[in-house]
Amino acid sequence: MNIDKELLDILVCPETKQPVKLASDKDLQNINERISSSMLTNRAGDKVTEKLEAGLLREDGKIIYPIRNGIPAMLSEEGIMVSV
Image (cartoon, rainbow, N blue to C red; front, side, top):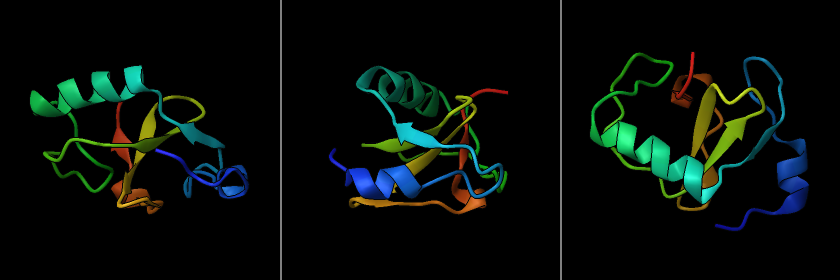
């Protein structure tokens, strides 16, 4: 998944304002395994059931924002809690 570098440079977590980076294939594999096991919820408290093709990982590694159809979902409630 390619995302425009200029866009990536200005995107930040809507909650903490931390920078985000494109999740690696290894990150996505780990996260998708946890999604398959029904282990992850988003910030709205809903279980995540849809595997990610791409995502933006917050600098601290605790939240990933899905990229759907090439569009980052950068709303707080869309963030998936991958680490606490």
